[in-house]
Image (cartoon, rainbow, N blue to C red; front, side, top):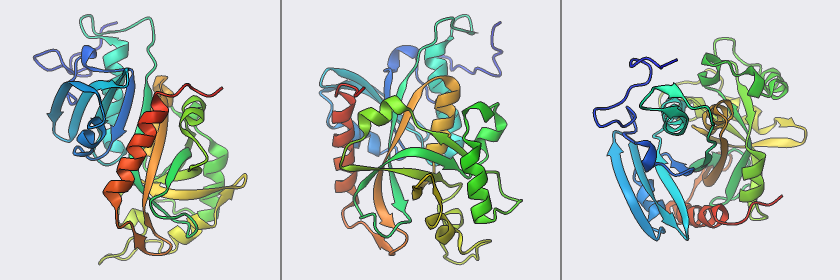
Length: 293
């Protein structure tokens, strides 16, 4: 059955509505970044860039890195943007734009987030890297989809109890990363962790400027939580949405985090650009490395 024009929106040139991409513009290995300016920071290492486009916060470049075709795309901040980006990336490979029908053969994408993050544990050093083995979403994105089959309710329930979770907040959801990409991207120099995806940068992450918080002990409670010996290591704003959308759509996803802030000690990196550069080069080298079994 053809998908209605109001649901699958295409631009006059045949590109997908928000991203302004056509299927031929997209590689099957994709790096997502939050900041549109960080796309250039990644593709500066490419041997060549064959395609560039930018619309709103969505900046995309596709090119070649050491023989591997890779697309780099900025998502902007937050899981609301992740909903847009991941639905449209999936449509580019799994919906026929001419017939507006879902393709019979499914294409699975490899999607790697390179992002910044803050740790809540005093022992995790600034400028280190964390790969998100599990992501816990404090947003409500997954609750708008039939997503229970991809969630880990035992983690969510334990966390709600531990936090004495306010009933007016969205129920947290927990989702695992792609095991395949975890094996490929992890090394002794990168710590595994549980990442909390927040719905904002200030109050939702326990920052106080002029507004009082509903729970001013939230970060302390998160710091003391453990599930099967795993602790919450860091806070950011996209990973849980990425993991949820990828799993529902049949793609593989992993989130690589550069730790720029330590919320427990009150410190911030003195060389954030250098740290992000190091994570970019690390990730690119892992992408072209053979997958570990």
